[in-house]
Image (cartoon, rainbow, N blue to C red; front, side, top):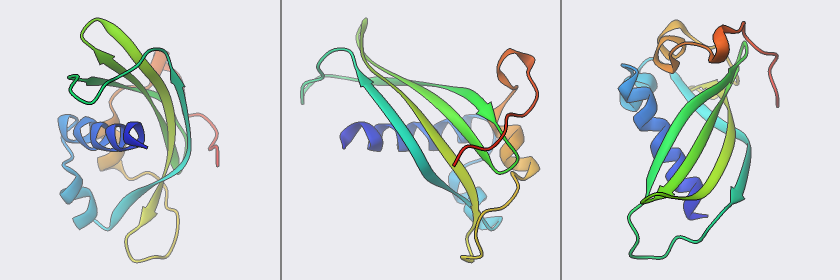
Length: 120
C-alpha cells in the first residue's frame, strides 16, 4: 500500500516539474484516475530507510497515460512499477481527452513514438 502512495506523490511531483502543479490541473477541471498498476518488489525497504522514486513516461494514449516508477534506497533498487492513469473531469462527467496542459507536463514521448492506444 505504501508504494502506491509513493507512486501517487511522485506522479504529482512529475507533473509539477513538467510545469503543471496538481492544484492547477484540478482548477482546470481535470484530474487523473488510477485504472491499473503493477509493482515488482526487488528488495526490502524498512521504515527508517530513505527512499527516492524515479518517474518516467511509458506511453500516452488519447485519454490515458502510463508512468514507470523505480523506488531506490541508496543504490538499491527496491521496487519497480507501472501505473496507467485516465484523465477525468472534476465535475464527475467521466473520462476526457488528455488536455494540452497535461500532455505538455508529461514531456516527450518515449523513443519519439506516436501516441499509444488507451489501456483500461
